[in-house]
Length: 122
Image 1 (cartoon, rainbow, N blue to C red):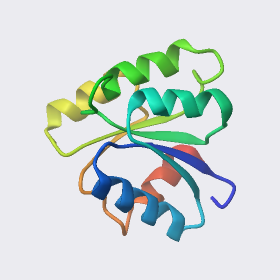
Image 2 (image 1 turned 135 degrees about the vertical axis):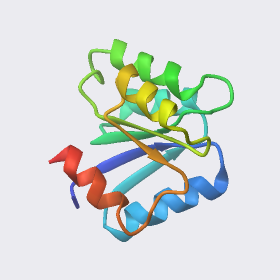
Image 3 (image 1 turned 90 degrees about the vertical axis):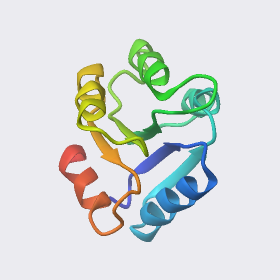
Image 4 (image 1 turned 180 degrees about the horizontal axis):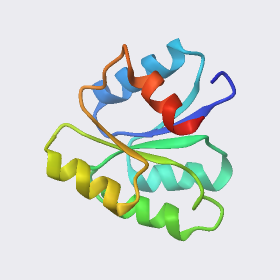
């Protein structure tokens, strides 16, 4: 895990802080983007183990960002994890159907989040 580098795309400052703190506590490198557009720019110049993407971003939303990642041969292989505060079972199912590797409702569970990620990234 210490060789992981994660991209967190989250517009809410509290959400950014929580995700970054959880990952950094586990010695996981993290870059934070406030918008999908900023996240895509970071993907042009950096390699990430995975991306954690809020579905409800201003401008380009998380769904559209996922499609952009999947359409780019350089990033199409990268696991992407959906997150949102607007949790519903239908949202989780739609996220998986759209191609997200997994779905995590907010607030992220500090005790289990990295373990859950590890199941998908091992």
